[in-house]
Structures are given as C-alpha cells and as structure tokens.
Image (cartoon, rainbow, N blue to C red; front, top):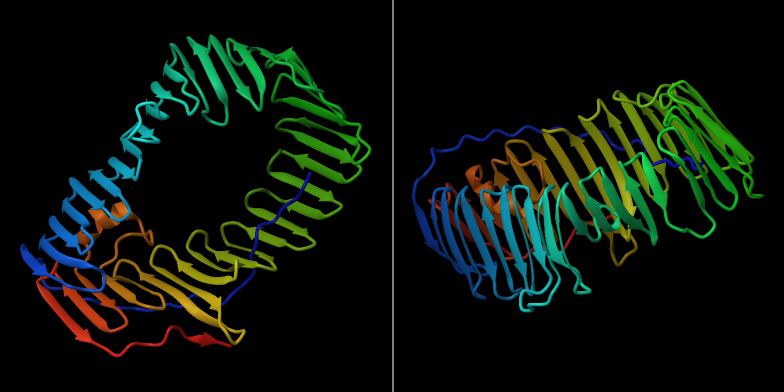
Length: 428
C-alpha cells in the first residue's frame, strides 16, 4: 500500500476588504458605435436583454437573454449557439461540432465529410453513431444494443440488461448472465478466475491470490512475490489487517479507524474523515475536518479552516508561482508570479472577487473591474454570454493607452487617454 499526501502548509492570513456601491436604476435602451483596441466596432444594447455587436474581423455576437445567444468568429472559424444556457448549447469549431440539450448530446468530428465519426445519445436510454474505424452502432437501453468505448469499457453488448452483458477492458472480455451473478472472463495471460458472485470467487495472478466469500463481507489475499510478500484480510465492516514485508496496516470499522505504515509513509485515521494524519519523506498532511487542515511539500503549501469557508495555498509549477486566499463565498484573491530578467519575480496576473459587489482582474497589459459580480466562477463563456450582463451595472477597462468606463449597458460612457504603464511589478 502506498500512503500519498496532497500538498500544503500555512500561508499569510486572508485579507478582508469592504466596498459599497450605490447604483442608478436600470436603463431600458442604449446604443453605441465604437472603435476600440478590442476590435469591437458596433454595439447595440437594450438593457441586459438584447445585445448585438460586431468586430473589425467580421465577428458577430447577438443575444436575446436569457433565451438565446449566438457567437460567430470567422478568424477562428467558430460558432456557438446557446439556448437557455446551460440547458442547451451547440458548438462548431472549424470542422468539428458538438452539442448538448438537457440529457441529449452529440458530436461530429468532421461536418464536411459524410463518413466521419459521429455520435448522439439520449442518456441513458438511446445511443447511436459511427466510430473512427467506420463501424456504425446503436443501442436502446436496456433492451438491446452495442456501444463502443464507454465508461472505460470497449465494445459493450447487452440484451435485456441485466439478463446479458458483454464488454471488453484492456483486451480482456467479460461476459455476464443475470449481471453480476454469473460471469465468464476471457483468457488473460497469467490470470485465472473462478466463482459465483457474490457467494465465492478467486483470482490468481503470478504472485497473488485474491479470494472473497459472500462479498463484500469477507475478502482476503496472499502475496508470494519476493519484493513484498505477505497477506491481508478484511471482515467488513468490523476489522481487517495487512501484514506484508513492506506494509503493516490494521483497520477497525473500516474505513473509519486505521493505521498504515510502509517503508516510505505512515498514516493514521482516527476516525476518517474527521481526523487524518500522514507523512512521507517529501509530504506531510494533517486534517481535523472540518475545523482545520494543512498539507505541505516543496512545490505546494495549503491550509484550510472551517471548511469550506477559509482556504489558502501557494503552488509552484512550470515557472509560475500562484498564491490564492479564499473566504467562501464572499472573498477570493489570487496572484500569479513569473520570473523576471533579474532572477526575481514579477506579478503577471491578479484576480480579486468581493462577492456580490465586484470583481477585478489584471494582467501585464490591461485590467478589468466589474460590478456587481454574482458568479462564483472566475470565467465561464456560457455565463458571460447569457447571464453576466444582468448584474453587470458598471464596468471599467484599463488598457495601455486608454481607460473606458461603461455603466447601465452603455447609457453612461467615458473614455480617457492615459500614458502607457510598465509591464509588471518586480518582486524581490
């Protein structure tokens, strides 16, 4: 058994701020014609309900919120149609297309070819499509059907499920009658299986033998390999034990109480998930859920308090260091640092959300502030196209040479030319 630990350790405390906004009543009608660096040249709005805009490159967006919106971009050859998002959405990117409407969904890998792979489904009842190899398939669950590549399984066949089920995983066929009671497994090199589920079963591999009786109440295993010999057993839900050369573990009322120790790690659960501690040579974890917990390793440090309200972490990955603090759902602050020429760090991105009042994000070239901010997700294309305008009463966009203020869907606008700013703040 390998005892793994996620990352974390204490960081600076959350910063708390307060902001108040008094906004004018909503406008019903606004229109404008723009030439701005973001390439929007024409924009027409009627409150948050209707919007039409075009760009210099021929892109078009229009929306009759919250019922329908369409975005088309000839540069990337992309079109997105939303119908009462998230209930329905239809995407086409170059030659590929995918769509979803309630529990129905589908895709086409090349809309310009009649023989391309495609699929459609009404989950979990009806499936139909064609594979990349040109195989047509269809299924009406649970009556009859064939479905390739689903839920990590290949070539699923069923007839009046659970009467008959046949599927393949990693080249090994499994056949069931009155699933999961009677089964037959195809030949797998070095593996032998016998049994009638759930009464008795045995699986033998090269250096292992696993047995169950009246599953899941009794399970056992014997390991005869030279690297880590030994045995294990469990009387569920009473107790269990692992006794191997490189692992010792006991369990009481599994999975609530246990102690495990290997040559590289040690873990206590007393009881899980409320108290858990574990440690390896490079990681350490403590969890007193939901009161406090922390995880730490070289590239990541994380801690939480009063889960899920307060969380803070520092993550270093691929030349970037990210610091994030959260007091859910009211406050989020995130800063991304990247290396600079002097060997130190500079701020590459920032994001702050003080829900539901405002959010602000910056990068090296621009910044954007929005009020109000009701979304708890930093960015979602569907929310931005169909819902964000209902609470975006004020927006401020700062670019290298311009500051633009927009309130009440274009009724109040003001632009100011500014001197270009530096590319980022250096951090020692």
